[in-house]
Length: 83
Image (cartoon, rainbow, N blue to C red; front, side, top):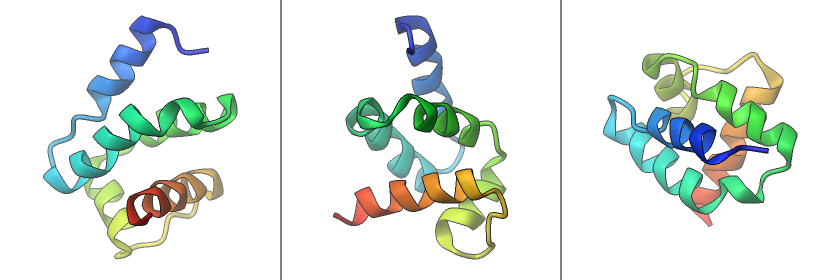
């Protein structure tokens, strides 16, 4: 589904301005992205469109994400990090 160019843009988008997000996104896109179902890959791509302060707050549990698809992806990524 993701051609080489689109995957390259996705990997570039994983490079954030916050180290805390980089250490979550970079390993995930390298090791876990290919395991996602196509619809989940699209959700991950959409997740990366949010601003760093929002992502940080959601991943650190400081705020709740009200988008159920994004919230599920956040939980999935956090679970992979903890395992």
